Amino acid sequence: MSELGGLKAKLGLDVFKHDSEPHIRIKPGMEKDPRLKAAVLVCPAGLYAENDSGEVELTIDGCLECGTCRIACGTEVLEWNYPTGGAGVQFRFG
Amino acid sequence: MEKFDVIVAGAGLAGLAAAYTLAQEGVEVLVIEKGDYPGAKNVTGGRLYVNPVRELFPDLWKKAPLERFITREGASIMAGERSINVEYCGSELSQEPYQSYSILRAKFDRWFAKQAERKGAMLVSKSRVDDVIIENDQVVGVWAGGDELRADAVVACDGVLSLLAEKAGLRKPGNPHDYAVGFKEVIELDSTLIEERFGLEGNEGAARLFMGEVTRGKFGGGFLYTNKDSLSLGIVVGIKDLMEGSPAVQAPILLDEFKQRPEIARLIKGGESVEYSAHVIPEGGLKAIGKLYGNGILLAGDAAGLALNIGVTVRGMEYALASGYYAAQAVLQAKEKEDFTAGSLSGYEKLLNDSFIMKDFAAFKEAPAVLDSSRFFKHYPELLGNIMKDVYEVPAGPKDRLYPTIKKYLTLKEMWSMAGDMRRVMKI
Figure 1: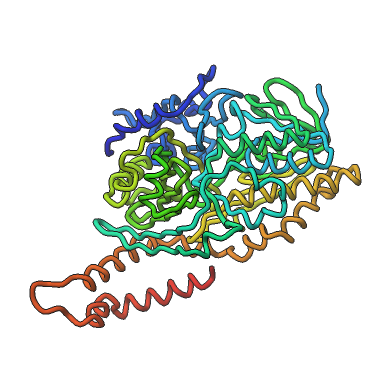
Figure 2: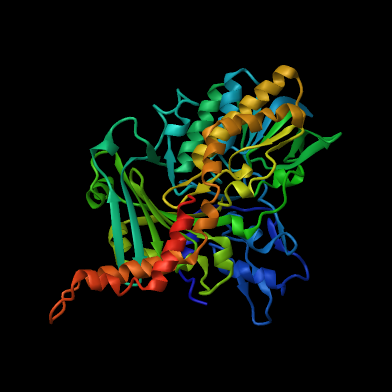
């Protein structure tokens, strides 16, 4: 995989408000499901990564709530909701 | 428990258009928005075409905080180290009424919400609609932030994923084939620099679309819009193509590479990125549109799947505004009968069918299938670039005649494939 080095700085430009719990979760036991691998490619924020043991991990900080992972991977492997009211990304330009 | 005439979920263009229209008619309407303010969760490329919706909201446009009216339409076909550009411009695009404007949604939606409030709509921000309340097979309200809120009708304008439409049983999670993802940076740049670089006067603006190498041949393209004192620069790419790899590339890398291309780097030079955003876009066209209403509920905007990519234009915001308007009209009709069942709300379908919305979707129903060919995004950009290179090249020795130069690329096999593609394109 190529470098996503600049992405952290890019996400750092955005306003994020903390949520009490993660709004997207990989369903327990699904970490190695092949459907999840797509998330690594499609997530514009680069929040999904595959670790050495072949499990896909998700870092929720920096989520742009675009919905791409839900479309790509489906709801059998992801528990997907929007953050609670007033939490998550708050676009100033959009 | 509180009771309203109508609850609108989501303060985007569809939701605000519905609320504005209903409030104008004296209907008690509550808009629930999960962001800190309307627009906080909303993303566009973006450009709004005003003509189709001008008359639906006659009082709105004069003071609307739009960015620049577009007077330069550019298209760029990019291959490895070259690009071929076409630009449509001229004084006819600088005459009022202007047909399209660049737009930043956080700014516009916030203002639009104020106009709806001024008409009498109620707005609650920082509140997420969690579920619909269904009684006897009829949607009778919503749960939002722990509150039970009731209404005669719910207009779900909760965006492309529309979790509410799923909860109301109107549709299932979408198929990657029918969606694209767009991601962009807003890059602040001095307005005089923007005008110089893009050849603009005053509040004129430029729009450019890019295809080919920019998505590594995947379905989609790049875009650039000039705002008042910023540029919106981004990529749209089909989710299925992105998932399938070949070549495998992580989406964010496409935008980084795009920014680094010399053609783009010189346009954004000295600018400062101030925001990075992303959103899914419905692009399945007519075939991907499901049920748009049920007992006590209507869908509008992206929630209804109303965005259309026909290659030369990608539009969604006018459909959002207009579908919100027609959803409101359908609710008004239902209100007269005091009947909010699906049968009564079916007026919505008729209103949509009689409007430019469904006429566009029907006219361009083949566009998604036709455009779904890697030849358009990979093969032709390469081919055209090769031809241009040879046509323009002056070698050290004698130069070939032009016709044979071009002819050598147009083999029988190529011509045959082109004719096939042409027959497909003629369906658009």
